[in-house]
Amino acid sequence: MRFMIIVKATKNSEAGVMPDEKLLTAMGKYNEELAKAGVLLAAEGLQPTSKGARVKFSGNRRSVIDGPFAETKELIAGFWLWQVKSKEEAIEWVKRCPNPFPGESQIEIRQVFEAEDFGAEFTPELREQEERLRAQSKQRKKDTKR
Image (cartoon, rainbow, N blue to C red; front, side, top):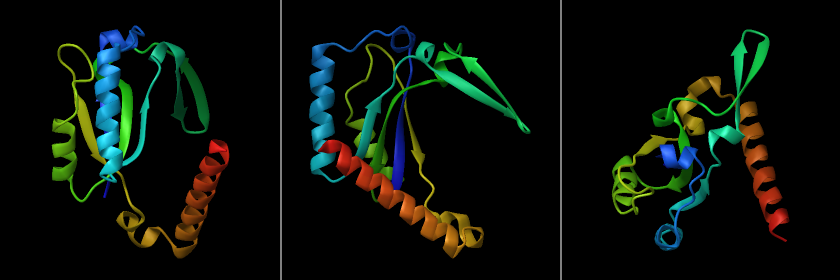
């Protein structure tokens, strides 16, 4: 099972306040534990929404809304992508995480859809396409590390 672990933004993260060395060290150690356990698939922090945009869809129309966005409690400051056996295992890993921000913060856990979750609508042709895209993505990742 794959889970996206979402670090919710705070006023400080939206203001671009960077973590101190102590937190960076603690998060680095935590990420090493995740990697050694074979749990970690990806981990990234996100720039504030002032550097972002949203694209709103309305039928065939598209409109772009530049950041920043007002509702801090609904925003994301970073994420992990994990491979674990269960939601309970993901919860246990999150409980071990250093607090990502001084004071109160929140981390959300969301299961990622897998191919089998889509049932018959996800045809063999669509499954093949998905596998091909994943393989291309892995290859691109390997190529950029060189």
